[in-house]
Image 1 (cartoon, helix red, strand yellow):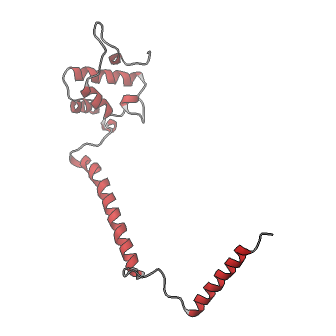
Image 2: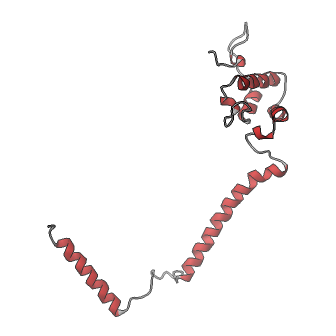
Image 3: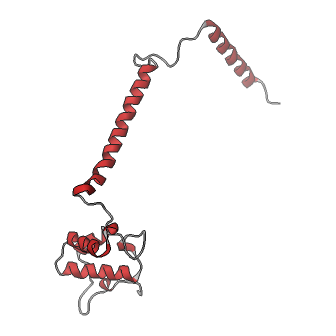
Length: 155
């Protein structure tokens, strides 16, 4: 396969090559500096393949996935980190969305409760007010007209 990274080919004299799990984890946590909008793991460019190979070599040399990610960030820039950090200000990216969702659901329940109370539905009352005799008679007349139209054959 012409587009296959070198580290995906078994080394001479050895069985099937499996990439170091630390390298795999680091590669999954990075965006590609060579293919805008793509993760490093799916970048088809030669630069992406070379970076994956470099990460595999560094992982084989003993670096952890966190160290590999930091090495890429130091060499290419913070914008290639796929996930926000879990310390400092970056921690807000993990905290704010769930808190916003919880707050939104809570506000919806409060608003619905207030709307029910305002309409007098708290005590199990039906929607709307009681109809006057005149309104009730108009409603009955309208229903009779509908029934007559349904019974009439189509022309």
